[in-house]
Length: 251
Image 1 (tube, rainbow, N blue to C red):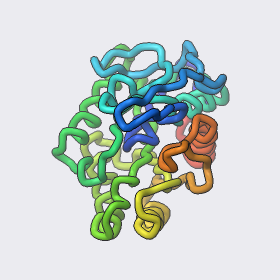
Image 2: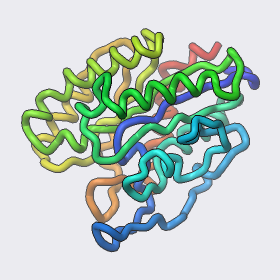
Image 3: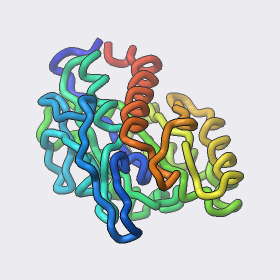
C-alpha cells in the first residue's frame, strides 16, 4: 500500500481516445460539442491533480485534455476513472499529465518530434513543479494506433515503432523500467489493418509493459471513439491492470 503522503504521477498519452471523446455530440465535421455529462467516477477530487498546459498543478476535472488536444472538442477519457480507482484503493495524491493529441500516428511520437518533446518536457516538469522529492512518475498510459490503420505499411511498422518509442521514453526520463500500459484498439479505419495493429500491441514483449484490450467496448455514433460509459470502464481496467501488476512497487 502507498502511504497517504505519497505522490504518484501518471502520464496520459496517445491520440483521441486517450484525450477523451466520451459524450461528444457531432452535428457536422465542423460542429461538435461535449454533452457536459460527468459520471461519478470522473468528478473532481481534492487528491487528484492535473498538469495544465502552462505546467502548473491544478485540481483535475473533465475534460482533462481541453488545453492540450486543442484541435478538437474533448470529452470524457479514461484518466479520471483510473485516478479515482487508485486514490480509493491506495490513498495519497495522484497527478495526471495529459499529453494525448487526436489524429496522430505513432511516427509523430518518435523521439525529436514536437509531440514527443512536449510529452517528455511535461513529464519532467511534473516531477519538479509544486511537489517535493517524493514525487515520482509511476507509469505511462498509452492509447493510440487508430491513425496507423490507414495503410498496410504503417500497420506493419507499428510494433517496431512502438518498441522504439517505449525504449526512448524510458531512456529520456531515466526510468529504465517505467511501467507502461497500452490499450489494444477498439476501432480503426480499415478492419484488416486494425487487426494488424492490435496484434502488434498485444504481442509486444518488454519488461513492465502491459496491454489492456478495448475491443468490444461501445463506441460513439462515429464508430471510432469510446462512449462515456466505455471510457469509465476502460479507466477501471487500466487501474486494475496497474494495481495487479505494479502494486508491489508502492511498498
